[in-house]
Amino acid sequence: MSNRRGFLQKLSASFLASGVFIGNLSAALQKSVIDHSLSEADFWEEIRKGFPLTRERIYMNNGTFGPAPFQVSQAMNDCLEEINRSGEYGHFDQERVLLASFLGVGTDELSLTHNTTEGINIMVWGLPLQKGDEVILTTHEHVGNGLPWLNRSKLDGIVLRTFEPQDTQEQNLEKIEKLINSKTKVIAVPHVTCTTGLVFPIKEIAELAKSKGVYTAIDGAHGAGTFDLNITELGCDFYAGCFHKWMLGPAGTGFLYVKKELLDELQAIQVGGYSDAGWDMTSKPPVLHGLNPTAHRYDYGTQSRALYVGVAAAAKFHLEIGKAKVESRIRELNDHVYDGLQAMGSKIQILTPSEKSARIAMISFKSDSLDYKKLGSELAKEGFRIRQVPESGVNAIRVSTHIYNSKAEIDDLIKAIEKQLG
Image (cartoon, rainbow, N blue to C red):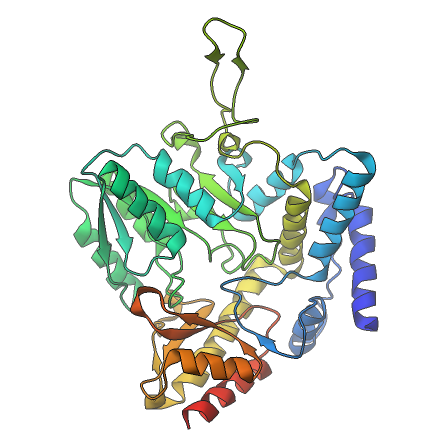
């Protein structure tokens, strides 16, 4: 309890001094509360103390939801109290500036949404597609990417062409290239699959698509907070993501990147306050003078400023550690999971590719000797929070670790799996 209290006191002092809630976001990044002089083991243990996660069980389901560190809740609570004290709920323009910088995009290219699925729907319905136009997807789509495209196919007659994900990035690029023809208009694959944690080579896919005159609309649910992400450098046209998974921010927050020169090609179907560049209902006839010249046109009406103050706090947390250091730690833990599972030999089948560039934060596996539902249930009884993956007939167990996890916890998981498999 004393560790938590001390951590919170340091964080609170840092945030209040920085003026996060009243104006100067850049000042919030000038003073770190994280001690980088600690040894590697002590550093990550100190990071772990910054999370309210119970030690009673081991949480390894970050691919579904990322528990936030104390400072995110602290930032949100302080903001809510200020809003209710003053009655001024404000907007989140300054948070948008920080988040755009964090993601490596222009502020005018960033729409702040409620989740990845909302951003995907904006892409799906806003793209200028006609009956017979083709869209390339995988057979391993999350419902948030698969269902919107299926719905537009049903209503507008576009054609969906799918491929089974392969084991290497080169093979997946080849699969996509073979599917492209004169009717292909969009490549809409995930950056990282939700089923097996396979990483697609988005930069190379974007280059290929551009050479063929094809849009790239990426499901980036697992991109922000895992990679040292710079979306502009990826070269894709559109990228939808969220902040409640690997970014460790609050649920109900997401984003959509729209390449600046494509703003007028991605139609804003649903609009409201802040979407416009002026309108007049008193003229005859009433007139819309135009849309907001930025990606702000896609997020409209009243949203919770406290939520995005929480996201900004989560981004600050990543920046204090270092985005590259976060990615390195995630990959290190992922390798430890992979190596532990691989050591079991024929007892299990690892579905996630062995190629290191084709994985980052999630690993899926199954066993011929024990049904995945039974194995998942037994692991839960042992105190492990993992995810069962029925999607696309994968029928496997998915383990997703983040920076609050330790190698000792992974070793305990491996022992528990071995115990169940006998």
